Image 1: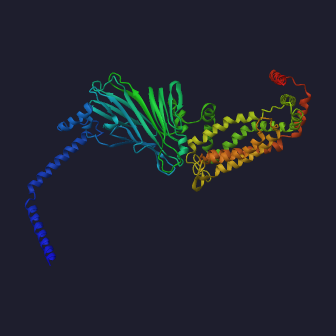
Image 2: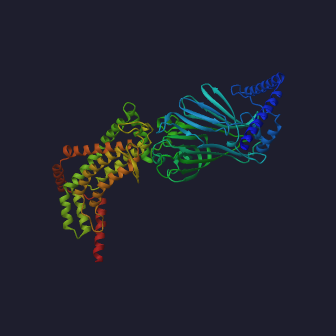
Image 3: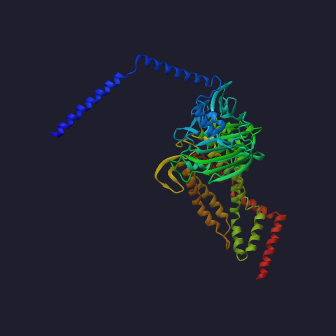
Length: 629
């Protein structure tokens, strides 16, 4: 009963308190005159705000003025930043974004730091259909650090620039000014042309002679973590490298594996190269020096990893009379040879990894133009097949010479065996007689190796061409949805070391073709192979083992490689098999070869100086051996 009484009293108390509060609020409500005064005050604030925005509008070109009435805030900014505290008091001192774009690329520049915080390729997507970004989510930074006359060390990435967006003809021009006053500033000027990946970029200052400490250089720091764009991050990482053009027009690269660094001189450009894209900083007047680093961020294949490499560059810039004036360019775009060669004076096409020496020359001036022509009117996969056929037909004379040499060695095999049996206890004599037989028969045992060596430049050049050919990127053929990546026909529920978690069909077909080709060629080689000498490895047994090892290596190694490369090897070996069968059946007649060899043996054969020298050396060695006995 007592508990019920307490509840009733509490309710009555709450009601009374509420009534009192309502009475107080009613008697203290603003009068009509007070409401009008508050409204007028608010309108004045809005009007002042609008006038300030109009004064700083980018279309007017007028300079914003500092609110000097807020002396406490301005003093605080200057206490922290010195003369550059002026920039912190401007309305632009906030992280606002200004966008410049054309049909190819979109760049977003932040007031804070005046730097590019997003670079998007408008016509390309990643393997999972996301737009290709070279800069995004803080993966890159661009900073100038410098000293002031009042002993401060400032970083532009921490300061606020004032943006002004205008047009120069059809070009978009964005001026980002870090101000000391209305007519004293450090400026970043971006100019983007229509239908161009290149951005003109100027760093200049005005009136900073008494503000900066010009006895100390400005340090330019450009850092970037390269964003993943392909389904195999380890494969993409293999072709992600920091590339640079420096003294004497050399093009060099940091290591694609592990961590690397270099101090370089006379730097024309630095390319933070992804697999098929790159962000490049170009200087019209070469940088005197630069310290660059590359850190490998990929340890193993991962579906979650987002970055491949971390690049850094530190470049000193000189003040001239207390001012700085550096004309640069940015290139954010694909590593497409056809696009890059348009910038002929800059030699950006040298950033494409064609391979070194003769291999790069073949790719640059033969295979790239050839494939470009073929793919202009043929499907991309068919273009690979046609190019492979053309290459194999071009190399068919070498294949013929190699097979002819094997046929000759096969014909004289009985005579070589006879010599081996006759002089089995006299290795030196056996070697001399064998060489005499080769000389009389007109057979060169090395002639079968020479054609194979001649094909190596073609083999390696194409090995570099297919994984880096931008034309193959995201181009499909049969079951392969991207000829620049692997062709997965099945996903495995587990991961096989060195193989992966998927099955690619083109490497399987290429491995089968290699196995058949090696069975054909190794069979011929074993027939002409001399018996193993004491203390020497048995080449016959090694060849038998290689018949099985080579296809397995192909199967494992190329499972994660570009399907276009595996397609090439499959078609190439298939064509070679057909050519060899044709040569064996319709071109080479072993009876005629045997008759020709016998005729050659009847003819007097003049001993060459080299043969005489070799014979004399062998005779001396044999004499010394007998003397020791």
